[in-house]
Image 1: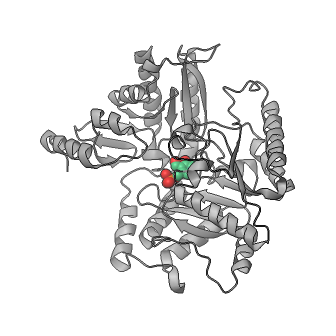
Image 2: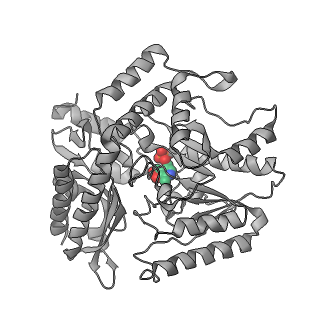
Length: 452
Ligand code: PLP
């Protein structure tokens, strides 16, 4: 337990010397030092100085059920005691991953009946690329090897998935995107010149996707990737009907449609999966984060019957050469099963009610001189700060610095994501109380006042 400063101080020093942090400025982090969290319960996290904060970002949009559920801890302990590991290789298996695969297949839309487990979202996306290539080979169309995704999208940071991601930070210096990875413009409604007319945004995206397919050659396009709501790009919500329209274009050209629900899955936006709101069934879906509510690492690829059958027939008696030592880890699966029963035992219902309260509360900040846009759905939201509402002028760099907004929120007892472009992101645990949601909104107003 990190309860006294000398120990915390020595950890800060050890961290500085040895721990490489994900998606961080190495030098900036060395200068600032780590903030150490020591415990958490419900929607509250406690730091090494004993400060309690509302976690308005559920860790990294993942602790959907909230912290400290004893039943999850017990499920993990029981599984560890009975069978801490079982491979899925050599026709082996264990009960928990089998039950989890069946539970997901039962709840997923349409015929997404086949589940391949990964360790998180990035390797789930990476796995879809490999499965999709294999699928087209099996169909005798190996030339279908071009992939399209959407600007401002995030699909992880593996060496292949990072090229589907469309955020420059994940490309610059890394030699991605690859030549087979293409983008169309984002549906961003706030900074889109067509924004006042959502139908025009949809028409423009459809036209652009068609043009991109024509440019590449329809017979060469393997798949199209979308997040139902773009998360890391700044919580960008497409106009209703956008996903359905893009899905229809893919159907027309026989292009596989992949819904990346790593953030939006597991009640984050209301339904179990966000694509249910658009009434489409993707050919493949990726999930992670809320799958285990962050208690252990796990992700998954859900495949439709058709995709699975083509791959199975294509391989015949040969093994499909894709897999990880920790695919379908039984302890992660046991945790996911328990988390699912908590979700369905009332947390999803609470999340839907609190989601409405969060959206209304954050929208009430629109009167603040710094608030240019408030957007989101359910327990996923963003507030975009500007210095001029009409011109939509982004905050100047000094104010805009992500760390400054993050620090201010922290001082107010609130953890939020602060995107570099002056956007505050929210994804609180679905177990939040009404008081906690109101506190998130009130503390945000204080952050805004201090930023003026
Ligand atoms: N896809 C989406 C939509 C994500 O938001 C993320 C992570 O934030 C990923 C994939 C990658 O998941 P992970 O960080 O678990 O590798």
